[in-house]
Amino acid sequence: MTSRRNVLKAGAAGALALGFPAIVRAQSDAIKIGHLTPMTGFLGALGNYAVMGIKMAAEEINAAGGVMGRKLDVMSEDSVNPATASTKAQRMLERDGAEVLMGEINSASALTIMQVAARNKRLFMQIGARSDALRGKSCNRYTFHVDIPVTVMVNAEGQALLRDGMVKGKRIYSLTSDYLFGHDLAKAAKNFVSANGGSVIGDDLVATDLTDFSPYLLKIRQAKPDVVATNLGGNQVTNFVKQYAEFGLPYPVAGFNLNTADAWAAGEGNLGGIWPTVWHHEVDTPGSKAFVAAFRKKHGQPPENHAWIEYVSLKVMAQAMNEAKSTDTEKLIAYFEKEPQFDLLKPRKGYFRSWDHQMMQEAYTFSVKPKGQAKDKWDFLQFGPAVPRADQPLELLAPTKEQNACNM
Image (cartoon, rainbow, N blue to C red; front, side, top):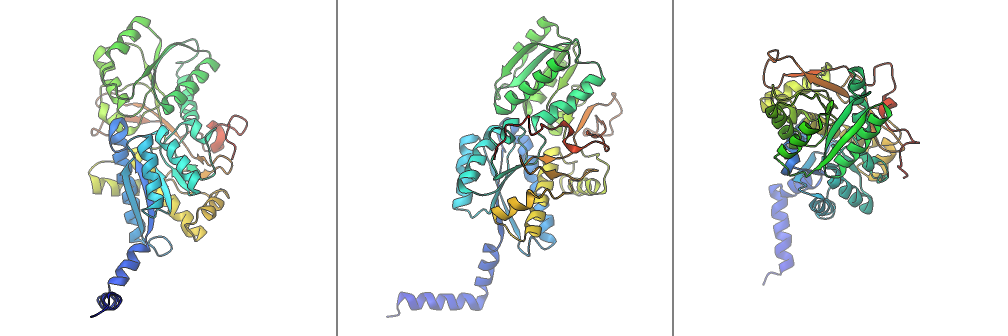
């Protein structure tokens, strides 16, 4: 009787003749990246753009030969909520063989993934969550943050509001998303308003699953503020501005957070006021134009800012791995902490600060074009110049070392 060992040997020899081991080696040699982002819930629309952006970057990198001659295998999953995000992150590292973790938009979920990364001593490139606390008191050496933090958003927006006389001496009523990001945003916004001569006469916490803003709009009507400020997130912004327009309230709106997808969903005629952003599809650089053209060809529309940031983040990770000649976390941390510069498809290159691992980069503000000027349904936003200006340091709007509680 042929032994089981001989059968296995024969099977292995047959597989070798057919070329199967080469396929297995090629598959296992791929650099696996665990990618988590919300694909459902109030941030789901943003997460779907994130998946499109990182997938497009992976396709381009692999078509160009991969990283160190190896293909990238980006495993994208719905982070769902903080507990699920933590569980999936651990499984990606332990079972799925992820070399690094990337992604996230929800600040509370990002925090739990950061904790997983620190416990496992593996790199997490935190791409889209903006809470100050993540790169402040909750920072860790295994996490690098790409998107602009809350303080930068507030300072960028605040400069535009000061310019237009919408802070000093004004009575401001605000609505805030009741989760980590919203709380951080409200705190920074209140500090800015009070420091510049304004007063917050009301600030209501809003559940993240709320869709009917009628009770809050009635309170705003009764309060008669000079300015309405929103510290909302995801499709909350869309729902709010649509209902605000339906109520016909006369008070100008100033938002401290708005993603392009939420603005598009609100539609021309519903959105007004001044808002901050980290990128838009009309940024006038060769790299940005090429990315927008390729995205339009693939998806039939311009990229939203979460598509852009995931796209450039994977390019940054690929550059780091190529230049460090490794996927090892310690070598990648050492590389990033040397503060090399990265092309973010903006006029100025960005870099991670060595002491809090925050990407320094330009931000923008935008308003709404006069009615009738839009070329299509994605073209009604009027973007302002980059901040800081070209003659100012990129760290101008960011918390200083003295203001930041990060201690690695």
